[in-house]
Length: 397
Image 1: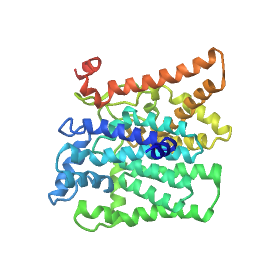
Image 2 (image 1 turned 180 degrees about the vertical axis):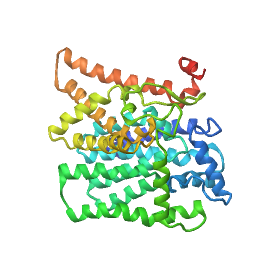
Image 3 (image 1 turned 135 degrees about the vertical axis):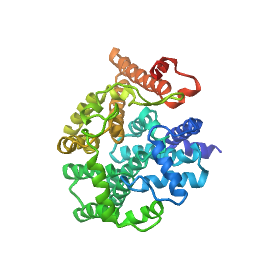
Image 4 (image 1 turned 90 degrees about the vertical axis):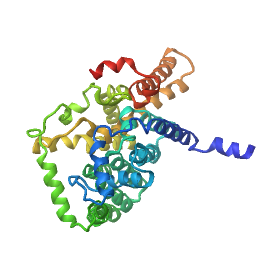
């Protein structure tokens, strides 16, 4: 027993495993509440019911892999909230693990990697979408897997992960932009293997599409016809013909403090945790500084941000394609990576300086920030159902 405890004490992943267990418990504590679809869940749950009943999918504007996770959960666990959301929870937890592994492959310390993963785990938007029967979480998980395999040097496998991400939701294809930028800036190695990555992504996307489409359509579909249909459907959704309070231009996503309500009691509020939102611009400046100082993590964080956020700006300007604030969801991990790096530098300042006020200011900032992050999460996330958040009750009116 002593030997086992000693091994566990030195095992790198003990704190990550504890974080995963805590997040799983929190998710499953709220997974059945409410017992009806929330926000866009209504589209995918209703569609999954039709597919299971033997009808064709009605959601032809998206690829099918993300929908298969919702359908699979309902087939295994039944047509209930647990079945709708089960695989989203599992994929969300895998995303947290992948962020830790990405940080480690960027030569960041264990503490920095755990800080980044922990910030993401207790970020409201991340927790919210990891507990909803939607396509975004599966798309993100495969994108993060693509990043991890790329950083490990497994270029062809990374290309396959990009294909799977795009098969969950077309926006997953943006991951290849981050990979390409980082490779051009920092690596430029294994040219033929990297060429394989760039080829494997579109080839496997086309090759696997009929397989993922077969069950939702109950027949074999021509992948080229499906791609054409999805692109036409996407291009038809413009700011000129889509109304409502939710559509927003990309440059508005990072400067918004609205608690967009998806559901009340429990709170399903579509907002990035303010502890992350308020610091987006400083974190980007910090990552730029680190990139200039030849930090691989700083470069990769900026490439991640460029691919999943900045790329939307010229796209919208050229096509007027409608976008929504929750499209920032795949970018939150990049912000948490930068925040983890910054917090770790403050902790190191506390450890290095033996005396002086600056030493205690550094550790105080870290402690207060982490507490604020957890408090915001406790007040705004669906978990607030268990203790109530009266300060947000006025939003319902």
